[in-house]
Length: 218
Image (cartoon, rainbow, N blue to C red; front, side, top):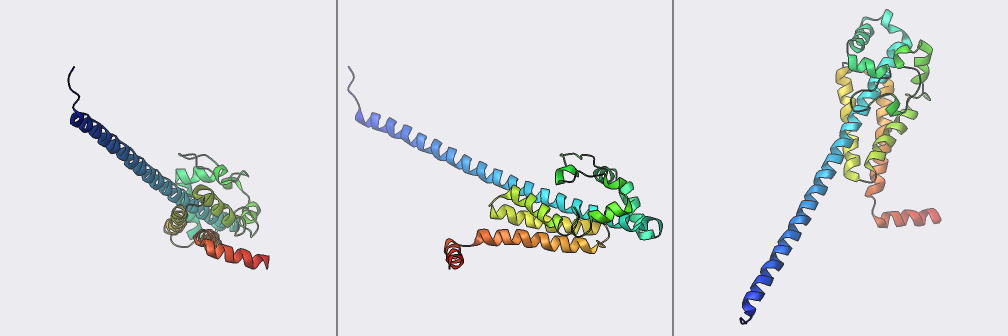
């Protein structure tokens, strides 16, 4: 029977141990990279969605404001805007209630009424009135809820969503020549105020929250 070489056993055991440590570290590093990648993908998705929602909302309000005043027959600028919509199949399909690639539609943003392209003047006016579905009361609540539901309590994701809302609004301005209806600016302001309040709440320290809780009790 061969003599047991303790040095060899120790060396082999140590080598196996080191390999296991390296493999474990590699798995942890790979998992961390995967988590970072997934987080970046989520933030990118939320930002992209916020851009799309913002552009869509502003386009809807531009269209409804034109339709509600019947400027299409009396104003060359409004006529050009309507022609731009009609000549843009994707935009026209969206306003008609059809679902675009990726599942985006009027229904996906909560609207289940008559197709916007089929509205009467009064119906269009009602939708952009202060309490209407696309008015300055309901829209900010709906848009902010949409992005906050996606981002949850992730501050970075919320900040990305906020940037997406602003970016979408700016792109809508360029799309429509920088002349959005006043309702658009008020809607954006109120939407950002809601998102900012959520971010500010999440940034509060435990000490601040405890102090506020004591103030409420007193």
